[in-house]
Length: 74
Image (tube, rainbow, N blue to C red; front, side, top):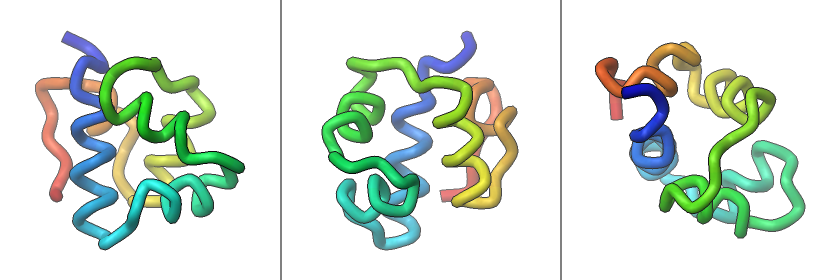
């Protein structure tokens, strides 16, 4: 499966780095935090640009974020 666990992985990385949802939204240059919450809970799919920003911020590969078979170090 591809991308079913993206939100779960993003949440794990966010909490590992001691960030709130609002802090992550600020770091990714989003005005509000609702989009972050929706992606973390699987209610919304991330755009390609969003995936690249998250990967860059947390220094992980996009493959680690998108491929459910791969893990991220959380």
